[in-house]
Amino acid sequence: MGRDLVQRSDTATPRDLIRRISIPRDLAQRIAAATPPGRDRAVDALRALAVLGVVLGHWLVTALILDSGTVRAASPLRYMPQLAPASWLFQTLAIFFLVCGQTGARSHATARARGTTYRRWLVRRMARLSRPVTAVLVVWIVTAVAMLASGADPQTVRTLVKLVYSPLWFLLVLAVLTAATPLIARLHPLWPFAIVALVDLARYCSARYGLDGLDTLGSVNVAAGWLVPYSLGGAWARERLCGRTTGWTLLLGGVAATAALILWAGYPVAMVGVPGAAVSNLDPPTLAAVTFGLAQCGAALLLLGPLRRALRRPAVWATVALVNLSAMTIFLWHQTAMIAVTAIGMITGGPLPGLHTVPDGPGWVLARLAWLPAFALALLICVAAFHIHERGRPEKRGRPGTVHERPPAEPSRARQPA
Image (cartoon, rainbow, N blue to C red; front, side, top):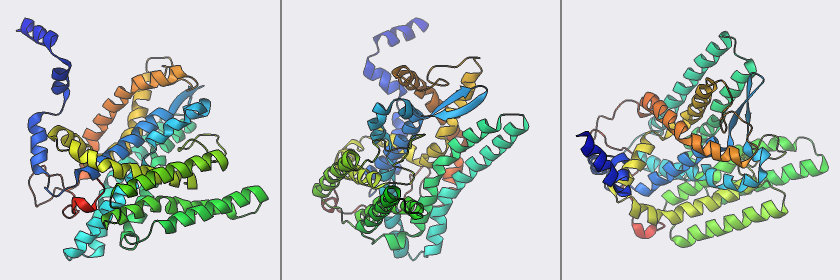
């Protein structure tokens, strides 16, 4: 029998090997059968791409360096600024807010049609955010207290806790926008876009002419900046973003505006925060980040047609569905997964390339890419342990394993971007 297995392995084609490690066919078929017929699978694919883009971006631009017994965070973008354009691929929050705006508006419309009160609708939406967040907060509070009690360096603890908690800011913004969905659903995206532009103009005048007090206006953009793609999602839910012309207009207009702001207005090239940089495009969101987000939203709308065709395959759809079922858990625990691998690596006794070394050259980038499978494995363990907090109590209605989403049946394809 052993000889037969060796012979089978030797004669296996690459396609056979891919099939062996892919999602089992029966599971993929069950997920496809449990999916409501009117569900727009492309929306779920965009959500999955946005979450995985943020995760991969954090893993590639964050380094934990062991320096004289203290762990500190560093970014390869500080040492290799020529890699800044790579951040354009992984800063996908605009797509996430676009999808959240679309699904939020449709969910609220469905709830109203069913006679569900706003309060009940909001409580359900907030519960889906609060349960997984509570889990990660409790675990890391206990971990931080235990580390300090055992004599760990306070700066190290502060670095690790900040790394885990810092991405949570966007969930607070998402919660506020979700609560305001009934008002935002009919808001034209040009209004928050104009606010972002005016705030950036005020910040520029403050820096150039030494005007006091205007710098604090930047906090307004934390909400206004992400309100732009969220309100675009509301327009999408109302079938106002129809046809490929809208997608191309957003994509080309966003790219042109972003390029102009970087080349002639002095905005940073990196679309993520870089330690030590004078200006960050993300904290708070700048006009360049918003125009870049518009370009991403346009690209997302143009991808709807190809995604819908690809997601007709049960295996592809099953992968997207499984990611969506644990999307919030993946986002909340991906930094913990990286920290766990980094900590285990310290047991070897010496700094490991791409894990504990300064991110100052191409060698670090190649080594970090080699560590990504280890990060992914650690993240899978975290998801297996904590995804129950995202799912909450099972629904009473529907078949077991049904991929639940609250939007109504998909509108006519003629009115949606293809």
